[in-house]
Every structure is written in structure tokens, then in C-alpha cells.
Length: 336
Figure 1: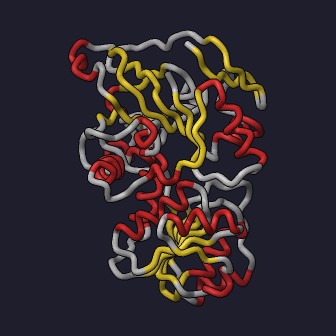
Figure 2: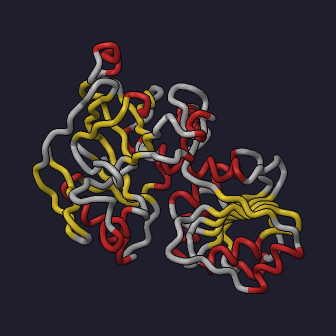
């Protein structure tokens, strides 16, 4: 099969790779679409994966090609989304059903080979059969959409409350869309430039250019960048007694200035962390909720896709994100 194999930091090669093995209880999925996550950029160019070589990519959808157990044969030919976190199923968090907080998890695209390939192997439990009419491109966005939904749920947003998101990546904008769908009176997004303002407003959201002018305005603020400045902005936007949710993957050490810390104390702001998303196979979870919302048209994630590249042009998408050479939201690749 063809795959993008990361041999070392900065050494990503589009080349022939062995077809993955498909043991009992696993499935081989033929990838149809794979999104490039912002976390893929440092993973490929600066930080690396957990071992080399590795095939990156964790936002994907496809069709089940084969299965390792005859009992799972009914899945063959089914279009599926793929939950990329593979829990150990034995630790205390797994036993409680909090699989996203597993102590010993594996992960498609960073700890094991992922979706920037024609074929990927995953446990059958990690496959979410798709509702009728969900395209491969949209299905590949289930992972970031579920992450965004999880963050909004962690905020405990109540109907009629106001919300604001710091961050204009797909997950940040997705969180604002979920907040609006779940009953927020306002779902604003802090933007840094005119291109992002236009993108946010095309989605029916309100763009806020100056966070200082909105200080203390929102019941819920969601940080979706992962920098000290973004955390400070989120805390500053949060109303007294409100909640700030920290979601962005940290770019490095996160430190709080004294006045930010004082605001948390004196305004009794609740800080909540969020990580990944809930998934329980066929049982209700962030993933099933996202898939059902897409199927009934309650949320339209295809509007977040700004670029689509063929599988052999994935490097172009990575370079746009790495250099910020063009405005983008979600960059998607399609596979044969």
C-alpha cells in the first residue's frame, strides 16, 4: 500500500509500506478521507512520534476491507468512522467507562500506524458504522467534532448562557457551533485577522476582534489554542462565577501572570480541563451524538473544510499549516 511514513523528525516519505496485519478482533479499513490535525504538524516536523517509523494521521474514515474474526464479517464493506484512541480496557478509568482517560492507551497515528495510508488496522470496537448519507470527508471530521462537543459538555453550559471560544482552528470553531446548537444565547469566536472573521461569520457565528473589550462577558469561555496568552484571554473573557475550559494542546509550558491568577481567585472562576472525547462503541457517546447530529442536518461540518487534496498531495496541506501561508480551517485529503 501507499503511505506517508515518518522515519525521523522532518523526514516524512510517501512510499510503499507493508499491508497492516489484522489479528482477531481487529479490522482492516481502506481509508477514504483523512484530515490533517494541527497536532500533526509538530508531530511530523518538530516533536516526532513515539517511535520510528510511524504512519501519522488520526482523523479518518473509510470502508471495512477485512476482519480478523469471522464473527465480525458483517462489517465488511461498511463505511465507518474510526475512534483513534485504543484503551487498555483494564485500568480503573477504563473499568469506569472513561476510556478517553485510560492510563495505558494506544493511539492511531502517533503510538501506532495511522490513517495517512491506504489501509489502517484498528480494533473492531473502535469502528463506528456511519448513518446513511454521511460522506467520507464529513466522517473523517467526527474525531475533531467529538473533541469539540466534549469540551462544550465539560463546560456544563446551560441553555441561555453565553459562550466564547478563543481559537479559530476547526475544533475551536466546532466548539462554538456545538455551543450554539446546545442552546447558548451567544456563541462568539475571538479572531485575529480579517480572513478568519469572514470564515466565522459565514458560519453564522459572531467574530470578536478585541478580547479586552469583552472582558468578563461570558458564562463560558473555551480556550482552543494551547498558549499562555490564549489561556489568559479565556480567563479574562469569563464572567464572575463562570467557567473557563482549557482544551488547546500546550505549545510548551503554560504559566499564568499574577493578575490572571488573581482573577481566577477573586472572580471565583472555575477552570475545567477537557481531553479527547467519550466513545463507547455502539453505546451513546460524544461520537454517536456527533454522527446523529450530522445525519439529521443539525450541524454541517463540511462548511469547515477549506482545502481538499488528493492523497499524493498531502504534503501541500502540511506546508500550508506549517507556514500559515493561506487562511485555512480544516484541510482534508481524499484517498482511493
